Image (cartoon, rainbow, N blue to C red; front, side, top):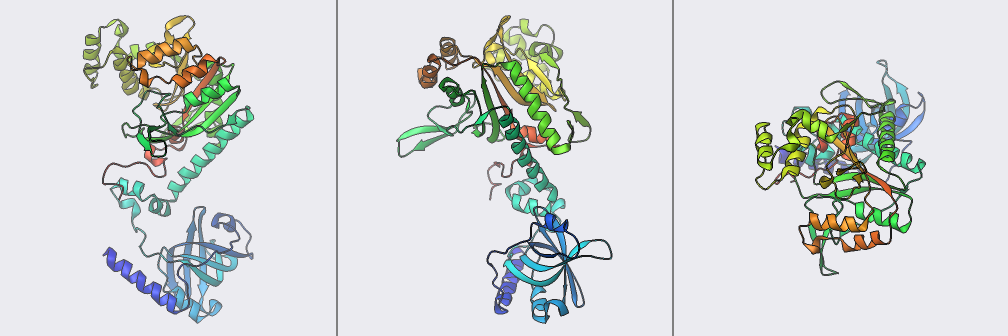
Length: 477
């Protein structure tokens, strides 16, 4: 059936060519996009363009709708207005064809803003039909791998990505107003550092060496603090060769920011400012509707709860006194799968991520995490076993970690070596060398832009807020 429909459209293309219509026309000067033109007053002469998504014929008249990213607008052709030849050629067009028209705005008796066409031009012939019942498709991965059809057929999908653009713009405005400077650091790195994650590895032919796609820009941004930059941020694409889930995509977008002479408390202020301002940008207030219903109030101040207290609530008051074997059995009794090689830190983190986070709907600063989980953060002044950090959880998802950054090069070396299990080749000597020149005390934070967009748009999956998410094998054809 698909080949037959394509052949039919190819025949229509040839018929239009015979009538003098170039199927892939030149640039077309527009009065504006359809949303802007629709707001203009009745009687204006306009030039519009878009994809034809509906058409109905009534004798010597044709009504059709054009669509672009801003919306839809009706057009109206009369045979005695455009001429018999142009009218007959228009009847050969197929849904999905992109055309440009010139005419006058008026309002129909049903109250719909419409362009009365005086002339039209074919700009791009569609050879494949648009899906008729897009909402009826059960294979949601078709929507992701053919996002262009998803957006054409579902205007609400485009709204999500328009919202994402507005979020990014507002993030930049907030940081710029606070004196932060946007910078760019390498995506291809000789060492994958700044986070604990499995990297993607590649090879540079020109240098004859292995390189890694960055898992985080942190160590390069801290080099800039050493260099004397006061406040820096980067909106970065990061890559982690790990799982795919509702909250994870191997390629994702992070905001990372660092401020010299600050600490984790300043990052709390920045986190609240960024999240609230982005919510106001989209919704006019610090409230959002959650997927599945309900309203989430993002208004500060946000509660602060120590990590240990949250784990106790789920795993028991004696959790941190258990042996590794006892902790493994307890975690398994709670429904978790625990690999045999995990120590108690990994088991504890699994309990937090799988059982604690999902309970925290209102924005919450989870504080005083175990120091061994955050090797780039300073220890708390009153408890060396915990770090001076927070994890911001909203809507059951971690949105942002933030630290008082470790700037002691000797302690940082000790932690790197401990983390690498004695493998010196995995220690970033250049970063440690930079620290030895002196990095001022600093606060730093990373905000997951994809997850923040999920919260602010009510999306249920990270794939709903990434234009072209990575799909499993066989689903990207």
